[in-house]
Length: 464
Ligand code: G3I
Image (tube, rainbow, N blue to C red; front, side, top):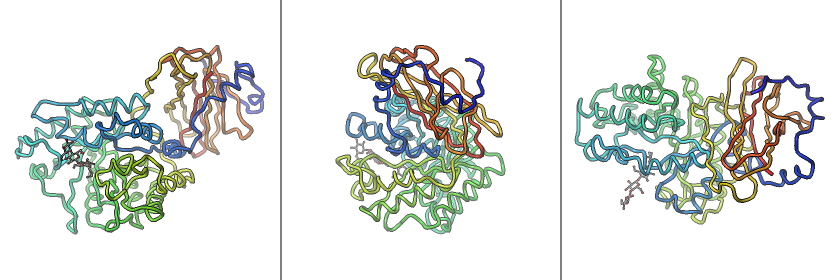
């Protein structure tokens, strides 16, 4: 890596990279997804992710994986990493279906939310029959084993799921785990932190969306207490399963903001809204806007791809119909994401986005991927690295890096940059030949003076 060079924009605009004009025309013709044309791209404009739940049994369905790969960049296993799936017999762990999903996600450059380490439901039969110290130890061992197995591959874990009661009590739900002692939740979080120090650790629940509900207050008070006592909790997941009897509350933004103000990230983890047409679309829009208005709302996950993939398919609660067509709800979500919000999250993912594995080594049209990873941060600026990976053999590449005003790129290294007239879009070309064999990668870096805007730059790659 060479020493960073400080740039004056006027001089740089005149700089020309290493490719001849004719070659450039070819390179520019290689399609790269326009920012904002998919859910993941639109969410990334404000530094957020957009995810979906994936079922291992559907990974052989090309329509399903095609939509999932195009639209989403955060993946949750719908059932395959739950306690009954991962420890069907005591002390015997089974990761095959969880691995299918994690591998698919990572091969396609996506991050993974882990769901769920400890829960009163979907326990294996042997655990349902345990109690007291035996159950506590079995639960802690499960948390430790599973979080250790997936260490380094999980962006955030739902460490504990659904531990609060519905209704007006605001109290914990009765369960075999709760009967092991009120400290079972914090014990699970401590075990998870020890096993995977880099994963964000979340408490995840449903019916916690309305600020005035007792259940919301119960969870809020637990998180407040955990933060005060140093229990390692990083985030709260709001499942967000809505229908006509449980609509999106008008105070949703207040709920998300109040939790965020406790010093945790908030994430919408299992979004689905029963209904159809404009009514459904409007409710989806409201959820997206609530998240965008909270700087620590780091992403949204919908609970499935097509309506027919949903756990409540008859309610048609998702963004794609059974044939894979985009619904009105999809368009409203995309538009709301592209309209942006008043805030952007502090960029702090714990695990970098995995680099996609090429599926057609060597052959096909020249293509490449660009992956951004965060570098060092200071009060006034941050560093970023873009990894360029060839998915076929390529003779050269160029990468665009778009920063958000009033951000400015003040230094670059390992490449030859030019800027557009706005100064917000940098095109980086290789300093040398740029030739890469399929699967090979190279990287360049830059420093952004953020001027108060911490949004991650968006990056694309085009190959020739
Ligand atoms: O795979 C078997 C199949 O072989 C068998 O024939 C069939 C018979 O019942 O069951 C199939 O397993 C079902 C599984 O979904 C896969 O479809 C289970 O019975 C069924 O219980 C399971 O339901 C899951 C549910 O959690 C269980 O609690 C849903 O898929 C899943 O979407 C749902 O997800 C939960 C979150 O984890 C937590 N928050 C609420 C959310 C919705 O309920």
